[in-house]
Amino acid sequence: MKAVVLYGPGDVRLTDFPTPELKPGTVKVAVSYCGICGSDFHKVAGKKNTHAIHYPVPLGHEISGIVEAVGEGVTGFKAGDRVTVDPNWSCGKCYYCQQGMPSFCENARGVVKGMCEYVVSPEESVYHLPDSLDLHTAALAEPVACCVHGMDLLAVQPGDAVALVGMGAIGTIMLQLIKNAGAGEIVVLETNEAKRELAMELGATYFVSPADQETVNTLAEKLHIKRVIECVGIRPAQKTALAVADKGATVVMFGVSDAADELPINLYDAFLKELTIKTSFVNPFTTQRAINILNNGALKADKIICKDLTMEETIEEFANPQYSRMGKVIVTVKRE
Image (tube, rainbow, N blue to C red; front, side, top):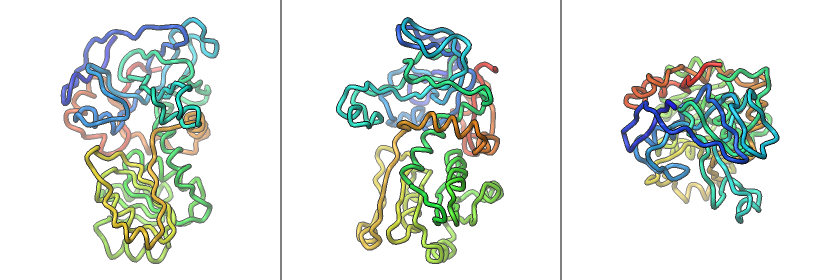
């Protein structure tokens, strides 16, 4: 099968790759679309990721597609079904799985290598898509599911003042979820001025550059921001998130940091504020909710997706990122 394959740090090729084998209890999916995730760029750069990387490996894990075939014992799916797949598989038997925390499974593995013509996944990781949800939009299910988990941790209450740090593809999803959760005032802290119009259209009350320290401080003091979510994963953004948080606030560090980074926190300031600082890891029990959100139109997918690329064009995007800095890029594997 044709696939976008990582052979080692910086070595991405469009090539033929062995088609995964259909086994009992698994579902073979013909991939229609696959989103590019920030973690794909981490892999290309040779950085640590959620699961260990074994080269060569196809990139991507945010997919939608159509069931090609099912293995022996599969009862919930048949050829022709429209589906998405949760890329994070858990064993269901280890300590963490038995405690209802499958995202920390001791035997976890990734079951989707999505920038290829076919994936084969355990049946329990596959989800039906409603006929009313197009496959192009459904490729957002995995990142939306991760954002839903982040929102659960953030626990926005109606009327809360919320700060969102960073408005890439994830921030654009988060902003809409925060608005839908009934936030009162929403402050978007973003260095890219070109994002201002979109932020205001999607419900932001204020759009401020973190470099404008005077305005940031004024807003923090005025609004008493009780919920802060950081969606970049770099030290300056994390420092901004901690700085704008009010006394008693909850701060969620959602952005994925480099494995060598440490949280830039002044413990005395955190002590004085009595902050609750949380981190968010993958998407436990949120995939179906993400599908429901996308299906009911609660998110404007066209404001999240900034570019569609062919598999051939994806090679250049990994070499010289252009569109991924603007929003979510969707790779077309096979149109529905």
